[in-house]
Amino acid sequence: MFELHASKVSNLKNDVLSGLTVALALVPEAVAFAFVAGVEPLVGLYAAFIVGLITAIFGGRPGMISGATGAMAVVMVSLVAIHGVEYLFATVVLTGVIQILAGIFKLGKFIRLVPHPVMLGFVNGLAIVIFLAQLGQFKVTNAAGELEWMQGTPLFTMAGLILLTMAIIHFFPKLTKAVPSTLVAIVGVSLLVFGIGLDTKLVGDVASIAGGLPTFSIPQVPFSFETFKIILPFALVLAAIGLIESLLTLTLIDELTGTRGRSNKECIAQGAANTVTGFFGGMGGCAMIGQSMINVNSGGRGRASGITAALALLGFILFASGLIEAIPLAALVGVMFIVVIGTFEWSSLRILGKVPKADAFVIILVSGVTVYSDLAVAVIVGVIVSALVFAWEHAKHILVHRSVNEDGSTVYEVNGPIFFGSIANFLEQFTPEDDSDDVIVEFKNARVVDHSAIEAIDTLAERYLSRNKNMHLKHLNKECKELLHKADKLVELNIIEDPDYHIVSDKLA
Image (tube, rainbow, N blue to C red; front, side, top):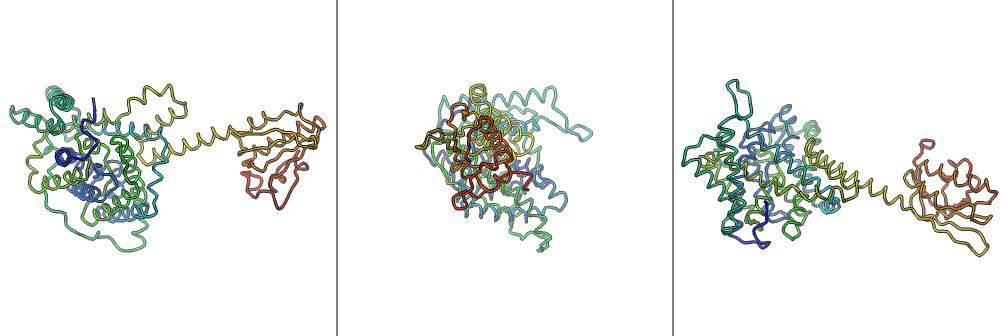
């Protein structure tokens, strides 16, 4: 249902129209995330404008949209509640500095190392998060001032408008692709509601977006080490979440458009945007996968799309707040539902039973953690699990090469790490009953990692000694000889040639 209708080539007309579409979708999102963070709506809107404009001009991924995001907003809640909004502004400034340093030291390139199952889990998890965020629009305030689910006519009206919006977005490109179908849907549904006087929730029912230009202000916090200790932990977490979400979104847009963004340049742009935002009363932000998908789907490919979205958002705040507040929320929810359908990797459901179980587990794990925790934690967990699986699989492939030397001795050359995951495979490759009476085991290209490996070498020695065969263990380190019980006297130490490393063992800890 969600297709990339526009070409992969940047086009100014498409960029401008797409940018206008994105700006309309940015309003309720920025307001909602401001409420999540516990700040005024304009704090979220200013962040969407400043972060969106700076990253659009200087970022490493043309066509990607940045602004205030929920992933960062949830981290800000406790900071604002305990210390106030001025500490938030100071934290956003420090967040930007950290992100700039990440770009200068070229850490952005490491996003390319994120495994594909983690990427699938990230995309699916964010699609679910975007979907769940829209459900809040189906609630209304009752007489007691509490939120409750819509019922009856208001529910059916909103559902009908959402379906109409989605239908226009899906079918309009079959008529013409000259105008983004998303923009047509928003304008068309708004005119319908206004024309026949339908009673439904509007953007203005959520909050007023009217305001002036953002003004420069140094955060009103004490310039002391105590303040630094308060804001540093929050800044580190915000910087990590912002960069991970931005760079993963960059990678996703790369795949969709068949082009390549510059991750380190994006880090610096995100950092500069957040630093400036903190000085102009914004809550900070990062790339927004939902709005970026709307932009790509509407034909936005160049920097003009992001610049247009940011400037249009500022125009809404200054001059057109009344018109924007008259847009039905159902139209914007319909747009986001289309984004959810297009963002979710439906193919991942089909391949779950065909891919390795470890990959399927990582996809589900990252999706779940993204929904129930936050993006940074989900990606870190996914990368760690994938790395452990990779290490486990390759450790099982330890190689032992058997040969006979000129003296008639059986020689085993061990290659790879020996640890708890590889000892079974290690022991299986020795054949004591078929070997000569003199056996040499060469560990020059191997590494003994933990105490399980020590036990395995002792077991191996016992098998040969029980058959009255001589055994020589070469190029084990001093710690191995110290930890071995049955094979310690078989170790032939060579101070010059033996490797020097440490073994994971409680006895030597």
